[in-house]
Image 1 (cartoon, rainbow, N blue to C red):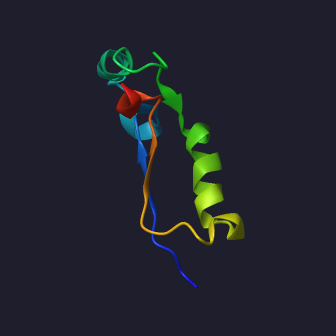
Image 2: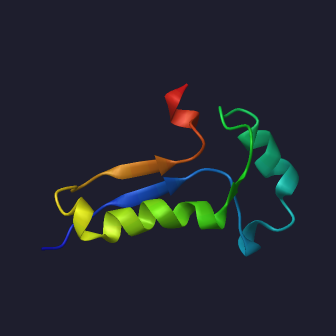
Length: 71
């Protein structure tokens, strides 16, 4: 059975964000983590949602953004 879920990342260092580190730092300063994520930090949540362990998880958007939605 297929599931449909999404990950909503916060400010993250990637090749595509090179050159805008200052903007990312400003965004990250407003979150409880107070830092910019590394792209590798998105892997665990993605693997979980793609794994059979999450077979009963359907239709969610998982924030992976340093706690910004918690404040």
